[in-house]
Image (cartoon, rainbow, N blue to C red):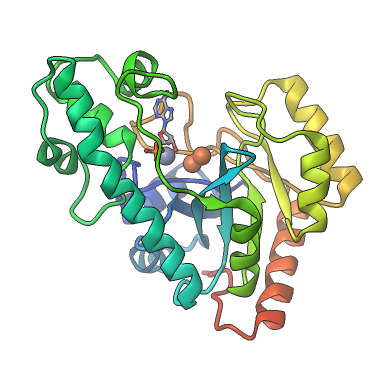
Length: 290
Ligand code: AMP
Ligand code: ZN
Ligand code: FE
Ligand code: FE
């Protein structure tokens, strides 16, 4: 029963539409797919419609840009009520941070002698998509400045890069509280990917503060990190998930289903979400079963 709980569509920085993503998940033999675009639930209706047509279980979520101790953390929110006003307001605030950063990045790139405009970058994404650095990368690829997204991040867009500009992200504890109040559950995405942002002590603190799980099996984690994280999740009573973080052709080595979530862990996650929904009194969505 392959379960992949973290994917991106064209509503953020993935390259497959929500419907294409669902179709591809079916083709890959997945039984459960989670759609978790960055800071938006905009892909949910299209994914839900496709999932019903293709007989696959859909878990609706999002990956919220958060910050802890001054560092970037990605918070996977599963099954929150996307109409909960405080959550909506927070997503608007994050979007405004993204919008405000774009002209500054353009200015830096132009200062580096690169002929690029905000329209070039927005044009790299679907209309209305949450625009991020991957779209800047795509515009740079289209102009022949770099060969692929990865090269763009490594040479100019990553932290410390010449075109890097930081932006607003939600304080992590506020994010966890918001997701819970919206009737959903929180899972820290790739906690030890790239940089080891969250210590074991921090994870223990977050578990007490309402975190439900951690993403253990992720491409950015080494086998040793996965085993340590699995042990920590077990000790802290956190759900251990596994996912691809699929971005279509936008991210190599993140194929759908390349990591999966154990069915028993998935069942715990769904139970926790049901409890959260009941406690919140919000009309949070359930898992969409075919
Ligand atoms: P932003 O949303 O603008 O902060 O951009 C961050 C996103 O860029 C992450 O969520 C990843 O999806 C993507 N990303 C980060 N590093 C890379 C990379 N080396 N290659 C491709 N995509 C990346
Ligand atoms: Zn992404
Ligand atoms: Fe992420
Ligand atoms: Fe992601």
